[in-house]
Image (tube, rainbow, N blue to C red; front, top):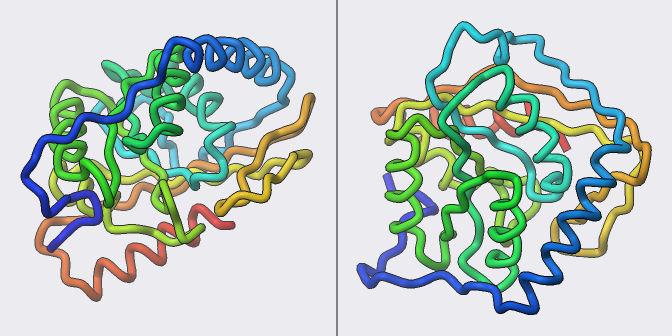
Length: 226
């Protein structure tokens, strides 16, 4: 099976890195984000016992691209209740991805730079390496370019290769600002109530048929809702 993360080109491609003034602006954004996050009233609903502490093996967290603003709240809870060596997150190799990677580094998140259109194979191999070091992985199934709310092959391929289950995350943000971007990016307003639902783990084997994979994709989408 060809995954959406695997590039056809064997060439090594270096991801775009932010410049000093971009890092300065991103640092200011991090402080603003921390203040904003402190005001949110978040509740995690874990009906399937994902955070029960009974398992410590790495998993793949899936959250829609337009809910990235709330993802660090989820990780803050996960880090305490389902320990791992760290978190590796797939980030685009583009200019915008470089800024996001820098911001996530301030939250102790290891960025893995790549997508279906650029540096895909390298990113996949890097993420596998981090998971072998007991890192959780995080990926936006419809990112970085969409279409919005469509499960791409990247998250499927990573689950097949590593054998790690996918944990679908759904964020219901009550008061929010919705941008006019391709994904209709959502930013919770100050003191917003946020319900964070952790879905049942979804496992995908290497020998899964195309029909079985399509069923699992639909199951993931329903768990993550829109």
